[in-house]
Length: 207
Image (cartoon, one colour):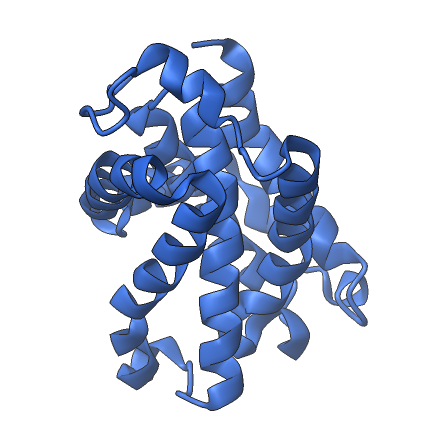
């Protein structure tokens, strides 16, 4: 595994998400300043999300178990199209949890499913190019959730915070997913994964 995938997880993806926000109407004017970027609170948030916020409990299921099997049967592109909505529906109960402030409207649900699907395509590309590294998948998932939480505080405007915070995801991660699908012709690095795993349903590695 090369160092570049760690850089993408910890720097590249956050940079893409920030760029997806700063050009939204009124977002830049609402910027709360660098105080929200203090390293220790960000690190604490990252560690909390990694262990308790979802990635550690989810990634062995989605990338560790489901994705290799879906890719073997349907290919990486259609496998991602199948896994994305499944991943989204797993989270649907949050629409009825008042603390999330995420009303279960048709628009919110459609945006959420679409956002989960484009993020799944990006995760498939990363997973395949790291030859099935579950650890990198965990880092990317954690980085995504951490940056999204920080952006909501740094740019407190409705277009960033409303709609389940999915507008920045659909712009930044959505564009990235479309570019990756186009450049790889839908293969999303699957050939590299198969080089490492001739039996592509084998258990992925943690490193």
